[in-house]
Length: 411
Ligand SMILES: Cc1cc2nc3c(=O)[nH]c(=O)nc-3n(C[C@H](O)[C@H](O)[C@H](O)COP(=O)(O)OP(=O)(O)OC[C@H]3O[C@@H](n4cnc5c(N)ncnc54)[C@H](O)[C@@H]3O)c2cc1C
Image 1 (cartoon, rainbow, N blue to C red):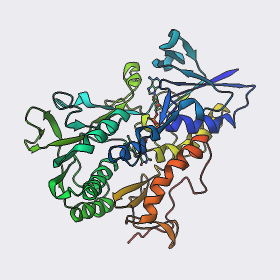
Image 2: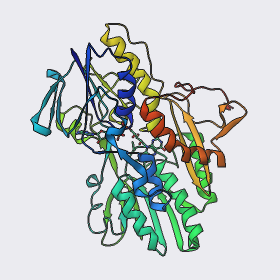
Image 3: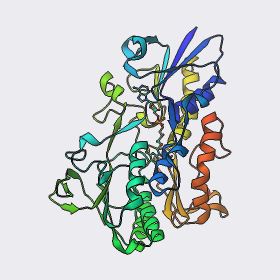
Image 4: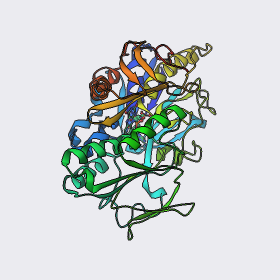
């Protein structure tokens, strides 16, 4: 028997284990999956928890629910990965797992301790994040009784998971306070290390316009140096100071601590990975899927989804001593909730920036690219069902996994 070990059973690890179980000969291959959590979180749902659209209990399910039978599933923290000796050690019983092939899908974590002062006096009092289940829940409780003031959203540094999530947060905040009748008492300020609302020019211009329409002030090129919770101010390295009454922080995102402990990552603990084959740059029998890699694609569930087929086919080919057939194109798409029951949609890749148009049927849609629509909003909310019932069971959607130019306006 040969052994495939999959590390992590979040978005990427769960999709892969379901798909690969159907392909590998059970008489020849043993599949082991290791995950530390009891619950699998639907992270896109964290955005809606502070505004009461979802309850904290709406965004998770037991992790084992989506693990197929026949997989040796181990609920344990991974202590270390030792690719030189094809070995993984676990915290539980100090167990050592030997493998023939390894897939690392340990994701990215937020690291508030990386920003000076962020976790000091105001943390979870008037400073919150919504990138963790407890952060989103605590922020929701705070917002129930907040009477207004200056709400500052900050992105500490790129890359972050779902780069549009902080934008969506501030758009929803505009809607939430309008609905509560206190929008005139709330000043909304968006501070970002980017030079505009988003990384890509056309999307940045479109989203910048939405910000202006909603009277949200953008403070670009703001590289945060520290938070002074005693004075309720944040500072940037170039000497700017911004006051807040409520700070919604998107802390530094880094690879999982186990990647740091095992010495496998770059300076942000993301694993050097070939951006086309998704094979580790250092170890031929190791593939990296989802947020754990350092490929220059968005850290997004959509990217994990579109790249699962690439890892699957390349892994199977490599196991059979064949040339790897698949090349990942960096395909990502994401609904951007803009408030008042509307959303936008972006669809892009390594080479193609988000463009306006219709998706998925050219000229018809029903989704609108780089424009706001009610149908996009229902697409965003409907995605939760698709996530649990289709994607996490390892089934596909009848849309191309590679970026398609059909329906996109290029001029
Ligand atoms: C607020 C927010 C909004 C988002 N919105 C969207 C969106 O609208 N669209 C979109 O496409 N994406 C969105 N994302 C991003 C998306 O959730 C992630 O990109 C996706 O979950 C990545 O999948 P992954 O499997 O790589 O990582 P994860 O799903 O994070 O899974 C990693 C798993 O590895 C486990 N693990 C890590 N270390 C260890 C260890 N030492 N031992 C054992 N297990 C370990 C973790 O417990 C976890 O279960 C959002 C994320 C956030 C935070």
